[in-house]
Image (tube, rainbow, N blue to C red):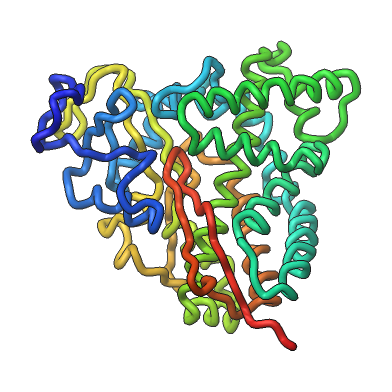
Length: 400
């Protein structure tokens, strides 16, 4: 393409791979962020965006999966574009073997056996929220349900005050879709917040997630303070916004597609596989990798220090991976998506996320089976390191 002179494009990047794509603000994202990303499939499999210092984007499922698994050549050292803050996000921004001890520390808290008890809590919270909303006949789904359920469960897992919910949600939003200065500010605010709780739990530990991290030892030594803080960022921001965003996209889809909604209601046995199909269709994470050495990848010259973005939504929307990828098929099997990553960095919280989405679907459809978009209003999406549903006005009939 012919691009403006002020764009800085390295010599090793061919002109035909340069695209005018700002991942924070792609055209059309407010209406449909997934279609806004899908346009990249019309060009080369690997493209270069000049925004935020310049970076590659892998657009096809085969390459996204290969790079997710190959930490030797595609390091997790910087997963944000551009790199944010001075703190490494453990274990997310660590590579094996260093990554392993940190991951093993938190993994038991998110295994199916541990999540089984949290499922009852999630169900109780979901029912309480829905029962308050149902008589009203309308709600703004994101702020009144999708953002509340995950953080209430997180606060219980971490044994933190429910009253801290709003400010933590604000910081999470800043971290994943804010400008660079807002992302740094979110880390600063969380650091000040969590330091008090770390000191308390080190003095008197409990069985909660904060106590686990605050008192952890790595290779026989107390965890470094910066690594501890990085881990808190991962478990907080990683768990809140991704699940809320997925719920928002799923709720919008069901509001606009009554046939699928009725199919789920009439065939509850489809619920488990349907969760993965919906996650595939509405993938949210757009993390990056750091190229560790000069190399050729499928004819593309990659230089040491280049960043390459792996958009999980593009994996799920790739027609080379899935037949009719834009269609939601609740009977599709198997559904092998990349929404939670692949390889050693697969998200340890994926089972909790799927459980919360399953509970939402089961309890919402039981109590509010028929709902749609409020007339005269429209949903609004956002793009960033996590794609999000920012505003979703729903309405439904209420018995008189």
